[in-house]
Structure formats: C-alpha cells, structure tokens
Image (cartoon, rainbow, N blue to C red):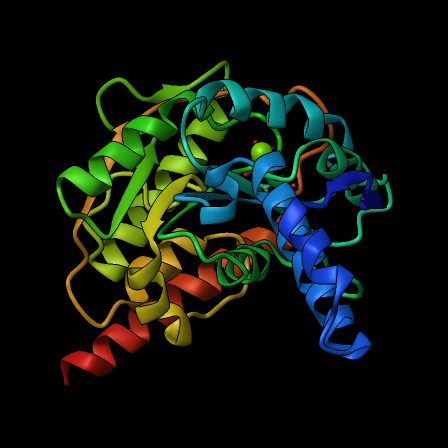
Length: 292
Ligand SMILES: Nc1nc2c(ncn2[C@@H]2O[C@H](COP(=O)(O)OP(=O)(O)OP(=O)(O)O)[C@@H](O)[C@H]2O)c(=O)[nH]1
Ligand SMILES: [Mg+2]
C-alpha cells in the first residue's frame, strides 16, 4: 500500500501490514499508523535538506538594507561563491523600503533557504537593524556587511579563519591597514572619513585603524556580552560595540578595498553625521565615567 503526504510516496513495510491485520484496537492502530507516517516524513525532510541546514549555520551574514532592491540578487550570488563549502546564512534587515527590497529578498528565499529576512515596519536605523539581525541568529559567528556591494565578500572566509585561529572577539574589514583602501573616492570624501576616524580614536581611545568600518565579523558570545550597553542609534555599530565591551576587546583588522556603489543611492546625510558625533560623545562621556 502507498499513501501521499507532502508530495512524498510513503511505502508501508510488511510488518506494518501484519500489525494492521489484527490490531489490538482500532484506536491503537490509528496511533501507530500516525507515528509511522510522521517518522517517514521526518526522514524525507532530512533527506531533502542537507545535514548542514538541519545542524544550523556557522556564520550568519547580517545585511542592513534600505532601498537596495537592485543589489539583493547580485550580493546573494557573490556570497554563494565566496562562502562555497561553508555553513552560512544571510539575514537581511530591511526597513520596509518602498522600492520592494523585502519582496526581492523573499523571492531569493524561496529558491534558497539560507536566505532570511526581517522586514521592519515603521522603523528606521542602520545600527538597530544590525542589532536585531544579530539577535535573530543562533550562529556562533556573525558578520555585518553593507547591502550595496561596497564590502568585498571574498575576505569573509579569511575573517572567519582569523577569529577562530587567534581566538578573537572581533575581526574588522579595514580600509586603513596595509593593503586596504577606497576605490575612486573623491579626495574630499577620503579626507572627511579620515578626520572622522581620528576624532573617534582621540575621544574614545579606541586603537582600531578603521573604527568607522561597517564591515566586521564578531563572535556571538562577545556580542551578547555587549548588547545591553549599546547606544543603538545612528550608523556606526562597530564603534558602538567596541566601546560597549566590559572587557578589553581582542581584535584584528583585515584589509579590503571599499568599492564604489553601483546601484541605489547613499543614505549618508547630515543627520547621519550628527548621529555619529552624538555617538562618539556618548561613548567618550561613559568612558570618562568608568575611569572615575
Ligand atoms: N535597515 C536599514 N538599513 C540602512 C538604513 N540606512 C542605511 N542602511 C543600509 O546601511 C548600509 C550603509 O549605508 P550606505 O548608504 O551605503 O552608507 P555608506 O556606505 O557610508 O555610503 P555610500 O558610500 O555613499 O554608499 C547599506 O546597506 C544601506 O542600505 C536604515 O535606516 N535601515
Ligand atoms: Mg554604501
């Protein structure tokens, strides 16, 4: 006899047939039948989805996104290539972008269960999007990268290797260590970025070359130790995390070339700059408070 469930052909074994010939009672037979079917369905699910997916991912890549519809499919494809052979997932956190970013991510998720989405309605904010994405993951390692293809996904395996090998809390994708840089940026933008970096280094005492990078990989345990101290506002989640740790942070920087944005528009505006100064001041004041 065969039955159908979830598009699966269920083949009943001889011993099941024998048991069904003289059931102790019809009720018991029904229960037994249900158990057999549920075991067969579980086995089918295990066969269809590979073991890695059932076991969970080692790395979650968190992508904050606002109006990045055109960048979704190209970035997911780049991640597939860069992370081949690894256990990974990608979690988009989209603030209900009017250009259909969330729908595009859902379209990709139907084809690949490693793609996940948090669509926030009535909310805006890059840092808070990263925090919520990281909190939604159960992976031991969490990467944060921009949605607009500016961060070089090819260094992710190296970042993961470094954090494990050197037992670090955080590995930063850095524009300002040897080998790093910015592709075709205007002199004014490079100067503004460097000045803002020096300002943060001076006021917060943080020893990172690129504390304003939006590209990093963090150990989940470490993130959970800092999460309740985070300011959570504005654009600079890395600086926020580094300055919120109760203990000295073990970190390394891996160089990459910050690419030019190809599709979509920049969200870097005057409010973002004001938020940045507010964050640095907040962290500097707290640091002075801790020293007293
Ligand atoms: N969820 C969410 N993501 C955001 C928000 N603002 C910006 N982002 C995302 O954060 C990342 C960084 O923003 P960008 O506008 O690229 O900032 P930037 O890289 O400093 O500036 P450009 O070089 O001009 O692109 C991108 O993936 C954005 O889509 C927001 O309010 N909510
Ligand atoms: Mg960008």
